[in-house]
Image (cartoon, rainbow, N blue to C red; front, side, top):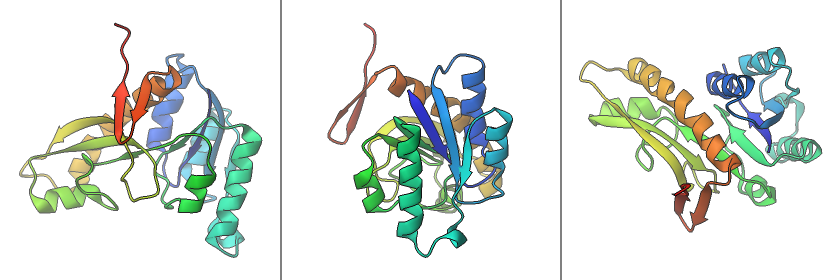
Length: 202
C-alpha cells in the first residue's frame, strides 16, 4: 500500500510510523511526506529516512484552492492509496475530500466526539473530565467528525495541565496510529455507515 503523510510540525507521529516501517512491522510503501511549512521538522525526519518530501507553503499560492490543487496533483503522481494526516494543521476543504478517491485518516488527542478542534487537551483539562485519550478516524467533510477507527483512553489527573496531559496522550498516539495503518493495510477495516468494524481472523 502506497502511503503519503501530510504534517505541519515536529512529526512525532510520523516518526512512529517511520520506526515501525523501518523495523519491518509496518510493510507499507512510504512514497512521500508533504507539509505546508518549508521548515517543518517532519520533512527532516522523512529525508533522514530516505522518503521523498515536498513543501507547499501557503505564501506560494494565491489561495487555498490553488494550494490544495497542487497537493492533489502531487498525491496523484505518487499513486497514493492511503493519506495519513499527522499534525497537519490545515483543515482540508470539502472539495479536497470529494476529489480524493483514497481513504484519509487523522489522529486527534481526545476521545471523539468529545473536544474536537484545536487544543483538545486544554479543553479536557478545563472541562474537568477524568478520562481523555486519542482517536484515529477517517476524515470526512466535518471537523474531526469522521468514522472512528481506534480509540484509547488516557486518565486525566487533578494536577494535570494542558502540557502534561498532551505528553501522556502523545505516547498512546504513537502506539495506535501505526496499528490503525496496519489494520487498513491488511484489509481488516470495514465501514458500515458511521461504524467502523475491525475484522478478526477467527
